[in-house]
Image (tube, rainbow, N blue to C red):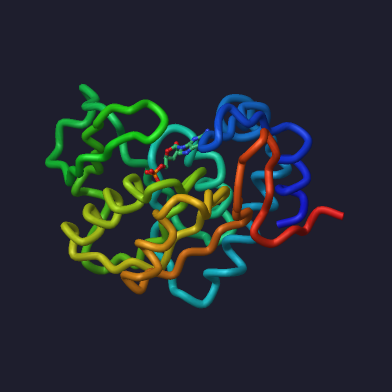
Length: 194
Ligand code: 5GP
């Protein structure tokens, strides 16, 4: 998506050869117009899949997730990273190792919100080694629901999450695919920035 690539080039900060900081529009401050365009783009891609629920992880997946769910006319569920006192129902859980925080979290979704009748679209902000997506897939499988596909805002194509997921036969659509962050420069797999 051209506007996303332009934003990454203008505002993204390369923290290392493997980490990109995009706090100005996705991970801290949120650009609502860009989120809206991303939500519409994901919805167009998955329009014919019969999506009944959009699933993401708090907190950075919520903004693109909610815009996608709005365009697909389906509710958004965000998996929680820590037990909430208000989440007293039975939970589906998965262990997810966080690439950026270098710690393991238990993510959970209430059994109330996923059923075998659901066809679920996963949305997340970044795809690195695929741990977050695999955790969400485990939760969908536990619920007996089906997976419509995965929509990723920024895929770091030099890490192996995308390959792992596509090798499993999962449809992964990424709005920007980064080939390299070497020498503090963002190179995309498909350059759309003019
Ligand atoms: P994975 O589970 O695919 O290894 O990593 C994806 C998760 O880690 C995303 O949900 C995101 O929160 C975080 N993440 C991975 N790489 C980056 C990165 O380069 N920048 C930022 N801001 N977050 C990242």
